[in-house]
Every structure is written in C-alpha cells, then in structure tokens.
Image (cartoon, rainbow, N blue to C red; front, side, top):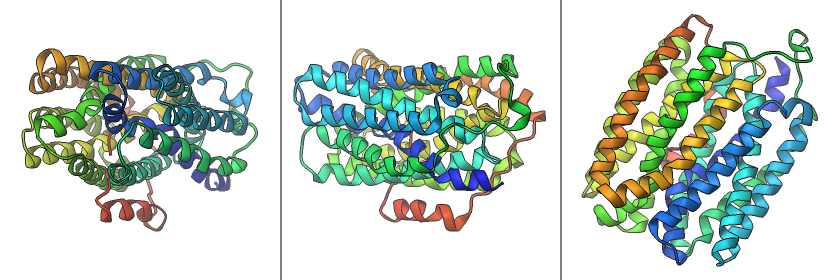
Length: 403
C-alpha cells in the first residue's frame, strides 16, 4: 500500500506532461495557421504529425517500460519534449517547426507510456487517472487564459508544453529505476490477458478519439470565424469548459464503481455526440459556450472510465499503454480530419458526420464494457484535500478540459 502512495504524484505529473499537447491542440493549430505561412489544412497536418509521434512512442514502448526502467524512460521523454517543443516554439522555419513538433510528440508519448504503466500497477489505477486528468485540465485551462495576453505567434502554446516537461523533470527522482513487478507477475513472458476485450477496445478507441479531436482541433476556428468571437473570449470559453471538466472528473471519482463501465462509456459517448453537433453548429457565444462546456464536462468522465477499463484488463499496464496509444492514433488524425471536413462540408455538416461516427462506435465499446462488468472495478477514492486544490484553482479562474 505504501509504494503506490510514494509514486502516485510523479506519475500524475508525467501524465500531465504527456497529455498537455493534445489538450492545447486548438490553440496550437490555430496559432500555427495564423503565425506561419500555412493553410488551415497544413496547420492541422502539423498537429496530426505531433500526435502521431506521441502514438508511435506508445506502441514502441508498450511492453518495454519495465525492462528499460521507468526513471530513465521518463527522463528521456521529458528531455525530448523540452527540446522538440522548445525548438518549434523558437523558430519560424516551417521545416524545423514540423521536426520539433514530431520530436516533442515522441517525448510526450514516452512520458505517457511510463505514466500509464505505473498507473496500472497502482492499487487504485482509476483514482490516479482521475488525478492526472484533474492536473492536466487545470494546467491547460491556465494556459488558455494566459496565451491570448502574450502576443501573437505560434510559439506560446508550444513553449508552455516544453516548460511543463522541464518542470516535471525533478519529480522523476521518485520513480523507480525499474517498474516493480509483484511476485505473481515475475515471469519471463506473460501473454496479454483478456485478448478479445483488449483488442476490441484498442480497435474502437481510435475512431472514438478521432471523432472528438476532429472537432476539438477546429473548435478555435469555429469560435473565431463562425461564432465571430475574439481570441480572448474563445480562450475564456475553453478555460471554463476545462473547469467544468475538472468537476466531471471529481464526479467520476466520487461515483467510482457504482455505475460500472457500460453506462458511463456508452451513455456518455451518446451525450458527447449531441454536444459535438451543438458546438459545430454554433453561431453565437451562448451556443458555442454551451456545446464546449457540456462536451468537456462529459469527455474526461468517459475517458477516465475507458482508461480504467483498459488498466483493469492487465495489471502490468500493457493494455493501458496499447489502448492509450491506439487512442492517440485517432487523436493524431483528428486535427487534419477536422480541417479537411470543415473545408469540404462546413462546420455544421462536419459535426453531424462526427456525431454519427460516435454513436456507431459507442455500440462495440459498450459491449466490451459490459463483458468486463463482472471484473472488479477499482474503487475510486479522490481525496478532496489532495485533488481539490488544482480543480478549485482552475474553476475559480474560469479554467477547462478535452483531449
């Protein structure tokens, strides 16, 4: 019991550093479009390349974290993230921005792989996941509120990700050199358990992530061009939405195992589909804010249960890393997909297409969750004293939440 408590917060910090890039994708893509000689589709493609680098790291490292060592891998990932995003932030050369984004994405994915493996080994992986979502939502919300006041250019959000990686580095001293493996798991090679459920979850999650991140990647442009809002107003909406997401995570933590997996994943995805339609069709502040806030309230709830489900399938964390990396593939394709759909069909039609995809993919995801329902779901106990500080700070400053 003591080991998880000593390693939980470094894992939460790594989770935050790894997930911050996708959380900031709307402002990153929007500022690449505005600050560099790029079209909207080209800016979306750079965002997709960044996230593809993250997904690649997850697939490469899924079964190697224990052997290579958590501390060494975490430090390598954070160093790559700092160097890559830092280079992309400081240069105006498109080729160097692309290279830095891909390198930084690989670093983010490496940090996420270490975090996912360590979280799966915790006594209560779902609780640690919710704490990670709280942390990254609060930080992303603060960035959304701050960036509009730091001038124009593409570098600010990228610099924020780089500095986060640098800030997390000292916490890696509390990670084990090698991920501890309990006595019951000390075998040379252990096959992946629950193969059918894990494969189905890994196959469906890219589509789930793609649909949502296609909208998330262009949400900034919807607010600016279709709803005719200022960048500061759009940033405040995103911050408020992420603050709502913090409340959603706290709510998911309080509910814990009471709802099982199927209802939060299936029902939550259906509600998200409705929010996607509302956000994509927004032409004013009220509609845009309502869609984004409701969507970001629901998204981390469903995501926390999906990650918890993956973690419960294999205590060594391999399914958690593989499913997370599969999700990153969809996340990576999201910005480019959203940009192309918006350019070809317009934002409202894009929303209808994405919502239909979400409803279709909710069926096999719910079926998988139902089959896993007879497994014991980790009890979620979010300590208010420990987690409410970042959540309250983000909410009180109108802070936010998506992918």
